[in-house]
Length: 75
Image 1 (tube, rainbow, N blue to C red):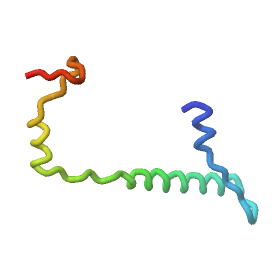
Image 2 (image 1 turned 60 degrees about the vertical axis):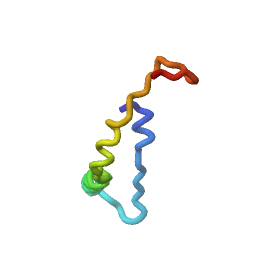
Image 3 (image 1 turned 90 degrees about the vertical axis):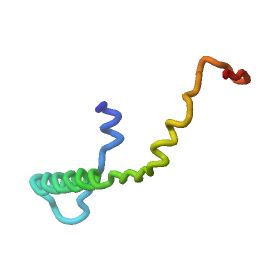
């Protein structure tokens, strides 16, 4: 991770009331980091089930030939 990536991912935390000690801020950062990691792990999209027809229809098509220019057909 470069310095530019770290600066883009940086989060600013402001204590608006009270005085938080360094230990309390460290605990807050640890809890928020763990919550973020757990949320990120749960945010994986489920894969759509593929029917047997969708699985087999790709085999019916012949692969494209990239060596033939447009407008020419091969038999």
